[in-house]
Image 1 (spheres, rainbow, N blue to C red):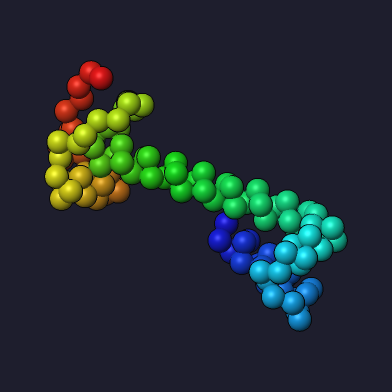
Image 2: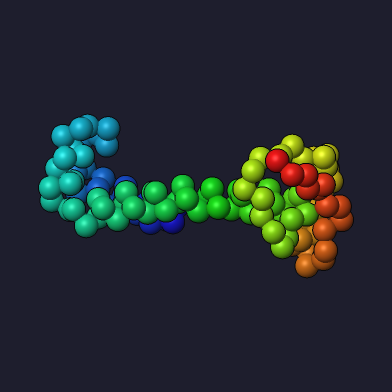
Length: 106
């Protein structure tokens, strides 16, 4: 994803070599002349944000030892930062979590 975003910037820079990338008229020119590149750049950027959010929530759930269920409500973790890190490392080593976060009802 990062590579595609970078290649789009390089492509636009090669098309409009003399103009700065922060020029608003450049953005409208790219939108008018290369709508496919522009739309893929924007959609890929939104996908990058979504992917980052999903990975964050997965790592947080793994760190709390919740491998089979996901609680949508926010609870404060009873595990320390070190215990949560151990859970993530054990997950990537294909082992069961060291400690589980206590699940309480909201």
